[in-house]
Length: 298
Length: 277
Image (tube, rainbow over all chains, first blue to last red; front, side):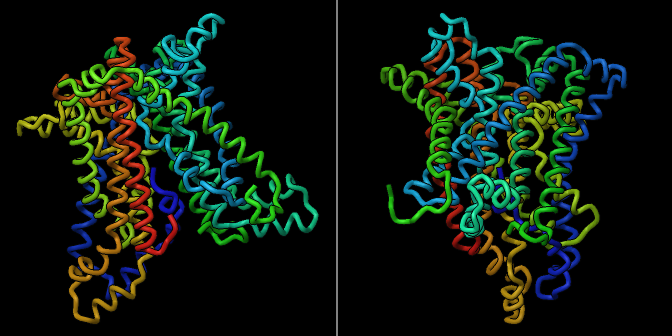
């Protein structure tokens, strides 16, 4: 993930300022060379894969495309993906707000270390993220025998998928909120309290309105990753069709069975989700930088 | 407890307590399982698991391809960031928004899409086939996938620094007779450099752990195009939990070291550019 500074930076229109100034204006051939090479790279590595998803999805016609989406295993994969996101996003939202409140509004030793620990899941390979839950809840793991006795399945079942999803999306919301709330300080909350507001009133009427765009931004990114996670979920899923398959895993199974058009059809839904995510993200960035009272981020 | 600051705001105990419990349950305790499990292995077991030729070949591929992909992204990412901040051209806003696609697109989707393009009957694969260049189902495929997923990092770390750069420095350089290239080389680039290195390190760290986008295009030939995360999966599928965990602990240690390096680089960027990270 890009750093918070990068994602929340004002993308104000600075380009025309640089082009208007003779000291920062590059010659035309430099400009077109840089844009040409940059856009070629962008097209080869980014744009073509995106287009390919939709072209491949419709290669055998719209009939095959929609048939692949309404097939029972596909529908069950879609349901499971939504379920995993619907559990992991709210949990990580509560965590993110809680962590940001503690870190931004109070002083305590070890704060920077805590922030580093919160970022930890981003630096762990998704495969390792899945493995750790196998070691804890799998048959060979710490709680495996006990869970087996009580007939509770975590690994190769839905709870494992949810846990792995929570892990990989763990830092998203916290890392958007922490720097913003740290920058805002606690003056406004202290003013509210001294004017007689209760703690909860202060939180809902002062803190949350101040961070709503960052919150939304974190939720959007968190949701995209939750629905798209592959490696971590793949380790704990067991790939049981119609039961423990999420959409990305369903794509893999169809692909490995050489049902390419069907695989790309399901993949196209995920690609659409990615595009919607980018549109929302751009909108939130644009909104959060409009100088509306109390909403300016940077 | 720390009695220095009088707390006006409520909820410190509750919020910090919940944070620590949730962090421990979801992240710290499960992660510690890797090291605890590894510590039950004998030295010989450990060495034979993490230093087997097939595993060592996977380290070389994973780290080599990740380094190369991050380097490619450093060059072209800088170019893209420069183009997006310094020049106006039609479609700029759309290109800028799409740069984040690798963050938003599920890795499995990226994997099959890249395979479709770079396979020998694909749009780009078919162009390279007559030249004798084979991308998909070999090490070059791994490089392509890792380049894709690392693309946004350098752009998004360099871009804000470029946007914030005051024009005065370049004006001073120009008034002292510097050419544009000299101004870039001596004035702009040194300011950008920490951010560029941070972006490189972020792209590298992400690539090292990547799984989903690589396995479709790599061909996964042992000793040739098998990445380390796949080794872990393969060992798990053979119920070799100890072997999988040992390799995972190697990867975890490397991830932690990279995290430290990245934190250091971000602090350096912040000092150099005077902005908070």
